[in-house]
Length: 91
Image 1 (tube, rainbow, N blue to C red):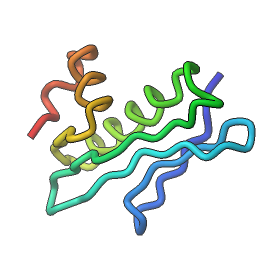
Image 2 (cartoon, helix red, strand yellow):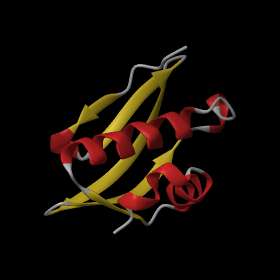
Image 3 (spheres, one colour):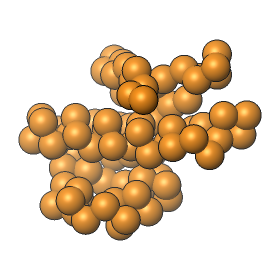
Image 4 (cartoon, helix red, strand yellow):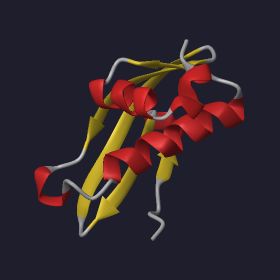
């Protein structure tokens, strides 16, 4: 099942809704470096891979735009460690 993830560029946020619950990944863009600052998935919908989907979507967006990534968020940092195909994006 693919999840609908929206990129709200003006708010520097990726967002999806699961069972009416908002889940987010926040970042700050400085030049061509995306600093991932927070991944938030409420406990009510946790354990479904939502944070992974948000992180993957953010990293794919960064790659597509030629951005580097600084994973300040501990979840995003762990995700990149587990998925070596994204290591080249790390600033």
